[in-house]
Image (cartoon, rainbow, N blue to C red; front, side, top):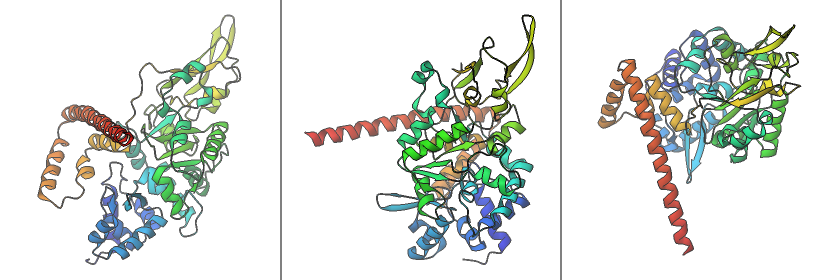
Amino acid sequence: MGHITSKDAYKNLEERINWFTQGAPASETFYKILQVLYEEREAKWVAMLPVRPFTITRAAKIWGTSEAHAEKVLDHLCEKALLVDSEYKGVRRFVMPPPMAGFIEFALMRTRGDIDQKYLSELYYQYMNVEEDFVKDLFWATETKLGRVYVQEPVLTNENTLHILDHERASHIIEEADYIGLGLCYCRHKAYHAGHPCEIDAPWDVCLTFGNVARSLAEHGGHARLIDKAEAMDALERSYASNLVQIGENVRENPAFICNCCGCCCEALQAARRFAPMQPVATTNYIPEIQEETCIGCGKCAKACPIFALTMEEKQMGEKTVKRPVLNAEICLGCGVCASNCPNHSLTLQRRPIQVITPVNSTHRFVLQAIEKGTLQNLVFDNQAFANHRAMAAVFGTILKLPPLKQALASKQFKSIYLDKLLSCQMQWSRKKKEKENRKDV
């Protein structure tokens, strides 16, 4: 392996990170963040790794070392939450998490002494709350959003409870998860160290991760703690009581996380405030409806709204001038925090007339975002060692350089084809599995 200077190591890592559909725009601040999170040798190692999941054997070959040494290095990177691992049929696989939700948050999901968390928090605050490039790229570079809002289930009417879909309920995600991890809220932890503590004194220990991400964070370095479903539901209930908004991965199946967010610290809700009416995350399928006749004008709903979608305005009702909440439906996320604070039940949630479409799973979301951002070739062909891969990458690269209108048409076609194929494969797999089980019963 040739000599690589410190500057080259971090520059290469920065370029590697930007192979993700969700990257991190270069800046002096981001360079300093990488220096805190990665030692120089770690930056050099990770910059060489593929975008897609890889094995110990693959890493050893890339690094030109033994599998035993490669595994030791990979375990070390997992301990720092710079990689996450999984195991399938006895074979371990590793993947580098994206910046968000990923290695940026993981660094502050527990208290730790191996890095200067105060200095890191100040850098994070500068990069995400003062500078704008990263936040704009994170939330608006693609039509398909990274995150989506979950509705607060306790405020739904009986009729809406009957019609809500499973993937719209945070409680269902908890019930279905094989592993659940609990960690500190990165946003409030960061804000505290940066000198901007949470304005509503919301709890920190409510950050939920699921599946292999939860298991990996818990087993390597204790960045999360594995908990049961009852404790996860308790975290959700405490979050409801603190007027926090539930924002999770924008997928229907097996989301990796659900954050419980306050308007003063959360990057997504801060972005909703700063850049309204642009919405940084996918909304719920609900929208508040105000019953002005029974409203007492207390203003609690407007005060509780984390993104200021409700304002109190004077209006004439008969001979009286009264104050009533007015909704800015264009920016409303449909979280239900306002309804949970109405003492008179004068504010209820109703289904939106146009339903929000949610990607099936993480792969579906990654592909849609890659198409929309023009980075599909990075996702599909990150190992371009073979001529046919290089040729296919060139074809995709050409398609993704088409004029916007043609790209949009290609994107719509791909979305439809991909989803149809995905569902078709799933049905075939389910049918074959059932046939196999039936043969066993004979």
